[in-house]
Image (cartoon, rainbow, N blue to C red; front, side, top):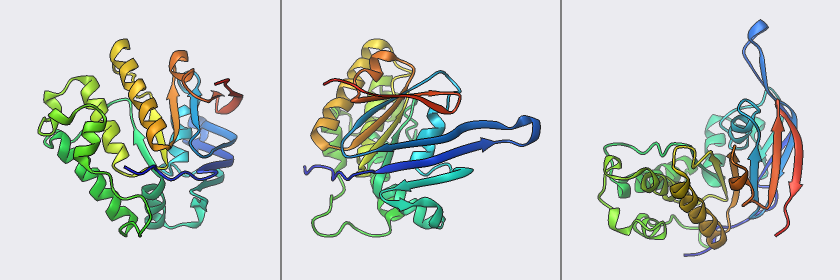
Length: 243
């Protein structure tokens, strides 16, 4: 398996503000946020509930458009792209792992991964050219996450940790340069969560994607190279950790 290509400034926010609602119901989820992630960097995104962590992940991944400011994904300013082009930019660059595995319940583990790879190719609108990262094989991915014996298992036949490992394999099937994880161990017990985080760290080291993990857990954040703290929609801290 070849390494995932890395690039400088995979995702950039410049003076990004996100406002939800109107009038008395107006909520500012992000307020003049500047942020970037480069290369194979690992960033822990921390803050209390409502601080803006999930909104920042969604903005970085092109799922939420800022009210003001600019977002660049893979070097492209998303505001200059139409909906189809934004989808292609996401497909070329970003994959998500959420708090819940969110697997398709009637699809096997193999089918969940194969479907994600197929959809990613359709969104991108082309097959990878010679020399580009090719789609990762679902069987190989399941073996990579330690579930080679679970190819035909339905989500209902998997434990919580196994389902989350399938979700990670599904994300990798999209050939991401940037993986965004929103509380990926939030629904797991501490032992299972630790094993899932060990897996993410091992895959990051092997494949070289950039990684942003939103978390409430200081131990999860401490695995990162850098910790960014959000408070009330502002970046209150940005600390490089010693390795």
